[in-house]
Image 1: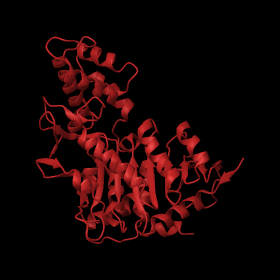
Image 2: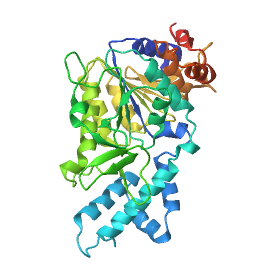
Image 3: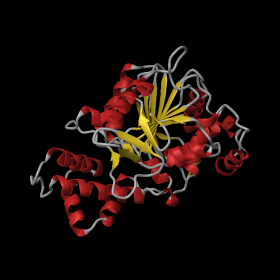
Image 4: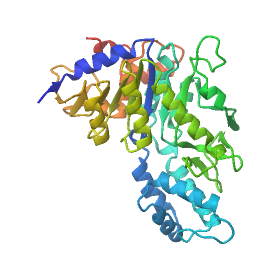
Length: 388
């Protein structure tokens, strides 16, 4: 069976990350939040059910039959939007569905409280963002609802744009999301990191029946957070942030010579999968590198075996250049690369530390960041260990 050299893999990746002309993106799934101590989507579903009263729990369990939590929320909102008077679906009136939606969102907000989180892995990612030096903006995409990334970016004073402008009730600006950065364009400056939350956030709220705003804190008691209501049955105006941000994801992947890093994602969303796979097939000089915590998902393995610019990486094996093989244990691995006989970068915590070390631009403006980098990811110069 073929084998792959983990040191060569990381050395090659470091060289790509050091290329300023590259368009670099990172896509974070629920595994990234779990590395910070928050629940992934399966754990979140169980915890939400535990928060509900008996009748609410039974009603949500009925909606969860054959669906995940996001799909159940989308269905509840469809019921609330389409029913009138005393009409019922699954024993729920429009008012019942709205009330259950609010209860679920309150439970989600409670379970994603950052007081219980370990922020260090996300702080390492933010340290990479502030120290990265690319011609085009660094773009961070996530399907997570928590505020981990925003908190870490703000801790290191990283300027970022998430599609909204304002502080207390920020409004979404489609034109700024869609405008590509470049000379003469009326765009957010390229040194602003882009943060795109594809499935909403615990601090997104409905300003009215047709508009979503971003609040300065998680949505409060009695209100439903705008979490993934992007259902085809919704009016276009109600889906604006979601469809615009998904289109931003598509266009980012189609940017020439894009390097997209995927971590903590199980490839369970067919629509997002196709956006990634289609871009890789059409843009042969772009690359998608997926770090999988346990096994390589079947959907990903199938595409990686036939599309050489898709790399699938896990602790024990990898698919690189269309070839599947185990990792050959290195004799003298660099710090942070190899742990307990596996490639450590499969875990978001180690990947974020590696990215922080790989940044080419020093940042001396914040002694707290220097202390953090020394404590959590080692010397800020350790990235040279991967240069061969």
